[in-house]
Length: 248
Image (cartoon, rainbow, N blue to C red):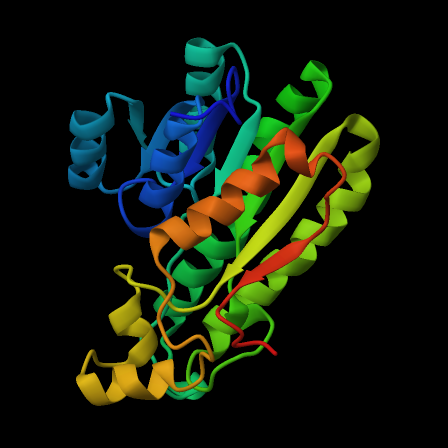
């Protein structure tokens, strides 16, 4: 057990699996009290059983659900120090003109609107407290887009720009806003990114990552820990690539 987040409170969305679960575990190891949020009840149940954290089923793209998240943070923690906007979805890999409107709307709701809704719910709380930290889990897709993931790429590019503009506006209030840009990782979204999960498709993806492996939840969790700790007190508006060199 460490103490880099001792006394801090955090809320992690999409905490039931993948990068979110990795971030949650790392934060707990470093002393934070964490509220785990996910739309997947089974994932939340597993996390609660494993760690004992408080959980809340919520849809991050729904205003009422996000208001419930803020209320839960206030009720359980008396406020919030760290908000991690990790929940994300993609559309199936394919030509941009073939992506259905429903799939497009879902990507934009979860990957972009959710950041707006969370800011609307949590920024006032952080302003009153005199500071806080917001971390958006974006993607290398927003920096160096892959073909056939056009609208996912665009949503993550939006998230990176939102991170920077939020950082500039909120800095005078003591609120830091950063992003992490993971490369494709061993998460439930990997098969959708690739179109199909085959050894050949994995080899093709890996060939674009100089370090030669997919990212793991602990890779993203370690970056998140630094950016959300006091060690990064001078860091805001950064979109940190954790990508094994893919974007070079």
